[in-house]
Length: 85
Image 1 (cartoon, one colour):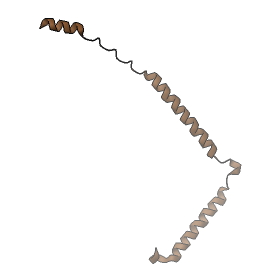
Image 2 (image 1 turned 90 degrees about the vertical axis):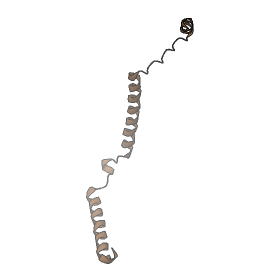
Image 3 (image 1 turned 45 degrees about the vertical axis):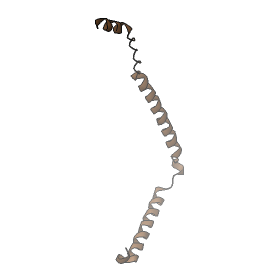
Image 4 (image 1 turned 60 degrees about the horizontal axis):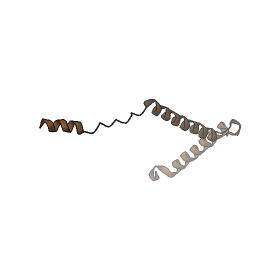
């Protein structure tokens, strides 16, 4: 029985070398590069959506329009009465 154990020990396959662990620094560099790309795309998209100051509507005119629309809605609700709701 002992001879069998020695024979088996001599015949066993060499242990496979484990795969090298991924480099955490390389992984972080890749994630950082990806986030920089996304951030740059977001900045570009935000720049396209901005309205130039000289092309922006007058805030006072916008405020008046909003108040007029609100008053009209309130008057409409008052006219409809409490029953119709």
